[in-house]
Length: 135
Image 1: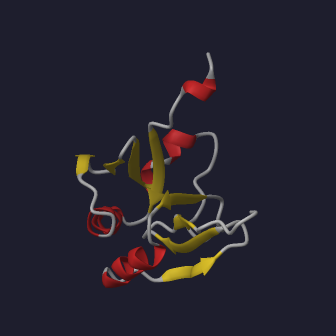
Image 2: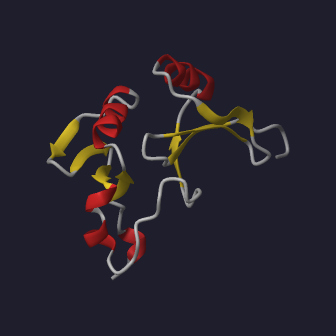
Image 3: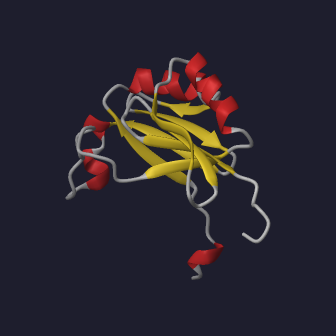
C-alpha cells in the first residue's frame, strides 16, 4: 500500500464540553453537523471529517494510552489556508473568538493568526504573502 495516495478522512478531537464545542464548529466555522450522538458531534471540512468526542468517552478509543487534560500543552496545530487572514480575524472576533497570536507575518512568507476551540485545540489561519523579486 502507498500511503502517499491516501487522504486523512477523519480527525477526532477530545473535549470536556461537547455542547460548547458543537456550537463553536457550527457558529465560528459555519460547518454542518453530519452526525451526533450523546458522546460526539461530527462535521466536515471539504475532504476531512472532524469528530468532536467527549473526553470522558475517549479512553476506549486510545486505550491503553491516556487522554491528556486540556491544559497539558500544545501537541499540534491545524492550519486552514485563507485568502485574507485579517478578514478572517475580523470574522473570528465577531464570534467572540480570542486570538492566541497574530495576525502576524512569519519569516517563511506566510501571515498567520492562531486561536483555540473550546476543547483547547489550536487552529491557525494562514495566508501566503506575495513573494518579492528574487525570493
